[in-house]
Length: 356
Ligand code: TRP
Image (tube, rainbow, N blue to C red; front, top):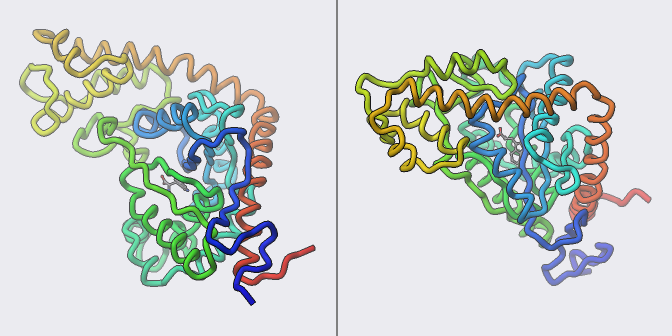
């Protein structure tokens, strides 16, 4: 008997990827996710990634997910998780993720993710998973033997997120490159063992130009784990202005883009360039002869102009959580329509009986 003769609507010739559909277009499909592990996104999240999420709505079929299952791989608090999941979704909406053009949803509301994870876990080598550097780092930080099995299998869940949607491209930061490589390997392994089923996604590593550094330690990436130097989108504006004004610079007085010699000033220039839609060269010109105080004041102004209306939009979503939850429930329903097609095919190919 041919190996895949019982796939409903399938074809044994190798082009049996069932993509499902939510969009009338044939644009390449994008999937990305963000964890609800902070009270606010910071400007580095926005400029480094979320801005691309928004613009990719013009060119791609976009699936965006608040990955709450990933958030419980480390210590967590239920009330905080619920709050942060809503805050994350509200920020994505306020930043321009548009539910009419994207499928925006919460991971735990689509059972396909965990169902596919199990199958992929059974294709993942223990040694292969043990080589994931992010796991090794996080496990080392949580102390000997205290890391959860969930933290260990985190990258496989991420692979399931991506593969369930047959995503063509995955916009992520450099730190996720290894997880994406695992995702590609698992898709290829599944396909070679069971017949072509899963789209092998391309990494879409987001450009370094938009890498934003910590304001108080401008050689390390801005991060939620170092709140002193991060500009949070939802922080009180006055507090952010203060952080900008006391950002670390250097001892000469020249406003020049030179990340190696002048990381602090260069970071401020990058931020101001993007937020004011100017080029670095233009800024270098217009600030020649001026002081760091002028540069900081200008950045404080554009930052304030950016976050003030954003905070109002986020607050509006959060004052009506029922409405927000309804947007997310609709997203989950649309996401499941696509992901369930993949899981059904995968389960069938693996040899599970179809529940009728
Ligand atoms: N691991 C990603 C991060 O920490 C978040 C994530 C989970 C993700 N699933 C994903 C990103 C799928 C892209 C695609 O940034």
